[in-house]
Image (cartoon, helix red, strand yellow):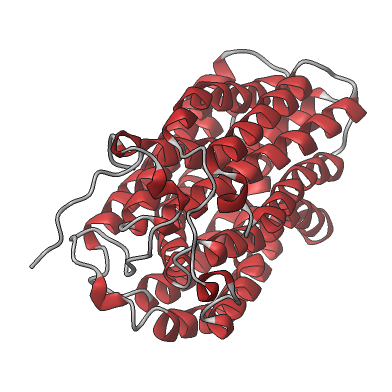
Length: 409
């Protein structure tokens, strides 16, 4: 018999959206830093990497402390840092201040993402919550890609959009628990469970994420410089691509655990490798759009299963935060790696190198999916749920109204 459907936390969806928006806007952020400030492409990519590295540092620092500090307090701190950091960077053209603001904002984004990941892992339906979070950030980023090119030049618009999103999410933190986690057993506080699977997944995620974001960080330049498109056209392609991502995430939510985790993660990663090579070699609108749209269709699907797998390894969400932070390390190195490879060997060679790397790491990721979540998979009973039913955490100490509705680049 199916378990009764439990209301899902919109507050976590909103936090997920706010935390992931900066990586999703990376191409336009890096591109505008390059065009509007006295920076070359590599320097602009380095600023993007510094932002994302700061976000990863927040995740590693807070992985085991979310319940201890309290979700509401930590989420408000992270959102405040995002507003101050990104907002300050948007309002100045002084490069050191822009760098400082990006780093502060990145730490805020990482803090918010850590709270969201911990809460999602503690939920009965982590895959569904992750899916809705990816839907939210993809839809918002797509709308911004359509809007920002029409609002004028300057480096500040993408950063300001991220700051305003954090500000808009701040009132929703009232639905989170303000208290520490209730008393737990000594086992719950002990060593991480599923250590081998968790470590292998955490070790592969930087490489997986680096390949994705090395392309994403230079996709704007591929469209502008190699495919000879206008900023408006490139923005439209990105918006359509993110719309395809919405379709992919919806499909992943409908499929749920029917295909298991190994097929979506392993085969999906291999297909992404081909999409990256296609996009990086594009010299016209057709090839560029085909590569970007197909890649964005697959990327959030695979990511949703990876996040669900990490959540299934530990009901307290520690592996979810650690794996997400490990992915952020790769995300942080992505823009700089893409810029360096493109500058040294050209976009097509960059795409082939990244694609080959993805094919290699698809093997251990598939192994973790086959072994890591096998025992938890049958527990899922709601059709679009992830293969895990984690225990409750501090998020469950909030009132029932904390889960008013249904709820990750």
